[in-house]
Length: 565
Image (cartoon, rainbow, N blue to C red; front, side, top):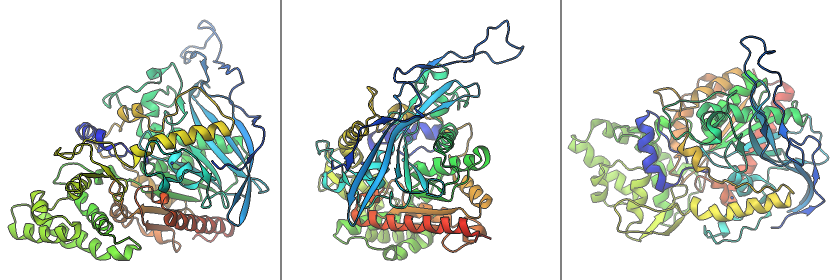
């Protein structure tokens, strides 16, 4: 999260497909606080002074040397560090919280952007050996609020109690399922999201360039063409992580990278840069509801993998609609086998094979809960939008693609195609934004800038790369696993998430070579009750915490003992 809203998605897909890339993706009871203090490594003075540019006039500059760039003022305030004591079930956590930013620069030292973060570090632990996790959401164009106060930080917004309403109270509560017990946490907002900003001036003037034809920009120039691009986005996050580790003397800590949704594209690419450019290894990679290959999502209806990977999730959604709560992936084993077997075979026979169409219409109707007449109308090729519209048309409800169990009133039930805000993501935008602003105030980090939970200019101006191939990160996942035999990977999905159906990840991970099984449990996929943000459900949040704790413990032990072969 956060993926693009359903109302914008239809037009965006058409534009992206024209460029031969398929674009898809697109939450207080605080502990005791003490007086905020400005961190000694603050990125800017209280007066927000400008970053000096290189000096020297043209006459004295060596021939062919790059021309000095103008001084660019920092936009974000100095870092603020506060201390807290949080009472949780059976334990008390004492920790330091830092809200601040890391300045990214070109080779000549001029500031190109500032990435905001919130870091939590447990007191009393040895920093050089304590694990530290870097977390972000997706979009592209989403702030990290969802994984931060929706799932894993010391405080969370009780999403399950908000009724997914914009008027819900943005009040945070202590999070019993926080990961802070076993790893320090750094929540990162990529450029343009949250309070992160692209520097004013320079290429693009910090604004989206509005299209993909001009291609991606370069790191030294910065600007929207760079930060709002597949590679620039991943590079900037990797560089920010490297700077944070140096600044806080954490280079020897076990390090974990966590990405959700479009983070499945960003994280493997950022990890590869960390390994090969920044000189930093990661002990574990966690991908939550990821997309790893846009070629598997959406597109012309002759691309059959969209329907194959969606069918088990549609079956799970139909069962939940009947009151059959999902408990285990074992319940869907038969559907998975049918989807990648007889269903795919009959789809490949084509719509002119009447017997094949009859077979899949009957079976898909049984699995989806839709009538055979409706299923036949779509050739038994159901995707997120078709299923959600037809499954909820009679009740005049609208369901979320992020979690099909979340519904709201249909703004126009007579419309052929839905034209409404997603009841999950759009319904929670106001309380999540309000809760984040309140948290920043309590952490002593205040700015008059707008907080962008979802940065529309980033999504609209995203540069999808100078290639005819679909954007993917599976190649980088293969590379980082092959290069580091100790790296472990955990992939998680929600059973009722139609935005990134879990079978797509299953099919991809099955294509990893032999080294994926080098050690037991090196690459693992887990399916939980819930949707895209399955951690919004208490049971899934607890189970994911347990999985993460075990993963980090195994990775740290393996690193210490040198067990990988």
